[in-house]
Amino acid sequence: MKQITKLAALVAAAGAVLGLAGPGGASAAPPDRLDWTKCTAPGLDPRQQCATVGVPMDYADPDSPEVRIAVSRIPSEKPSTRRGALLLVPGGPGGDSLSDPSGKGQKLPQKVRDAYDLIGFAPRGMAPSTAVDCGLDPADLGMTRLLPWPAPDGSVAENMATARRTAQACARNGGELIRHISTANEARDLDRVRAALGERKISAWGVSYGTYVSAVYSQLFPHRTDRIVLDSNDDPDPTRVTRGWLAAFEVGVEDNFPEFAKWASRPGNPHRLARTPAEVRSGFLRLAARLDRHPLPWPGVNPPHLDGNTLRQTMLTSLYDPDDYPKLAKTILAARKGTVPPAPQSPPESVLQNVAAVAVGTICNDVDWPGSAAVYQKDVDKSRVEYPLTAGMPRGPMVCAALSYEPREPAVRITGRGPSNILLVQNERDVATPLAGARKLRRALGDRAVMVTVNSTGHDSYLDNGNACGDRIVSRFLATGKRPGSDVYCE
Image (cartoon, rainbow, N blue to C red; front, side, top):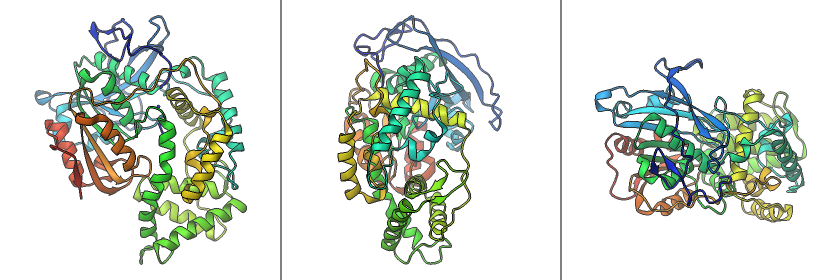
């Protein structure tokens, strides 16, 4: 899931950044220079350094309070061939990339690590940057509450009640900062980070929601972009934004469940569920319906039972990565016997509260959501018929149905204006960011972009769930700037 707040005429009335006009806007004060120190978090590469940079909470108000953005880096491994800095832009909203220079950044080929300082960051609102917290009831932090899974009969009444509770808590406890968390402001913050790094231009590898952040950055600050990789791409429709991404789950599940069903019906699979893929699907639907009627106690899970929606949520998260198929199969096998698998580990409540608050701020500030339960009910009823695996959830009401901050800045419209320096990489079967949405981003970017479609399954393509062909093309682009002359398909 993924989004933009207030700052009404800011794009048109942008100020100067370090004396250089920029369409994204900023206050006139120059940004901090980064004071790098050793990172204190455990398990990091000893070369990783950490710093913070100050940014205005409200870019439309030069006197607004300062927000601190936490930044990390591992410097280029070969300074003589260093090109610049590569931003590792995380998914979310509610993700950060502070540990990524030590983590996935080390999977980058040597020529790429030689060419760039690898830069991670925690977006505004995410600890250890200046953080927000809505103080939600712990019961409302469960995934089947945070995502709008409807009641067994399809009713969205309880979803609307959850939305109201969550909205009231965020309005009460989120403070002023939550009103200024948005994709456009994250992009503006990244330009302040770029300036603090002392870079005239910056490269980026954005993943999932990070593709939208990176696309918005490329729209607001096209003259500041070097080489931009968008990996697992969101539909940039400015009229829907997160609402469109949530709805895309119904398509993403239908694109991906057949791969799970083939795996789960394969002879010799120790987690085999049925003899044929069709039987895997029908069996899943029957089991979910049975658990809707007769949930199983599941201590240690939030909520503490395995009902139909918990099974559907387990299915959804397991389809992100084929390596997680056994988790779903084990849950199904246990539930068939009237038992449950061991409870999965959950992050600390403080982390869940922080992630939820950042997500609320982003998705509710980026675009308007309808406030009428009837609108959602009509869409949910239709979705349940057409996409039974997701039971209507992708069309349901999230917290934004009951929370709106005004005035809201219009969502950034992605266009083809700017340098031709963007490479999209997209798996053909991706549950969270389906190919259909990636094609819309590709069309919006026009001549600025080339897209590599990868014959692979799972979310996150480059150096993860893609294939060697796609990885090779992206690595060459980052290291040398060479892209294919047109869109390509990697078998």
